[in-house]
Length: 138
Image (cartoon, rainbow, N blue to C red; front, side, top):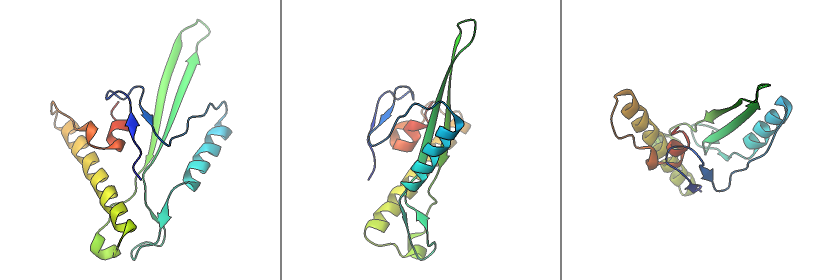
């Protein structure tokens, strides 16, 4: 199931349906969220991998800080764990697994297109072509 993305193409104010936002105040709370996210990932057995990840995982950490002089600073850290591309013939994926493999491969291909456009200095970068690339657009 591909989540829908709402918000600006510039990477700001993007909201992902089915995502979770939570305030944390300690590194321990951050790790708890990372573990919870990992446990929610979809994993299935294929001929090539007994625990094949069926989705990408994106963890966004926003840090807001106010300095003693009143200056406010904001940072954003993205951690991404990509599902691996799959050779459908080798994995012998069928049905739902086949559709997941197609989506994973399409998403990775789109990410490659974005990286290629950025490294070559193209005027148009195809961020809108996938949920993942929209999230990474800023």
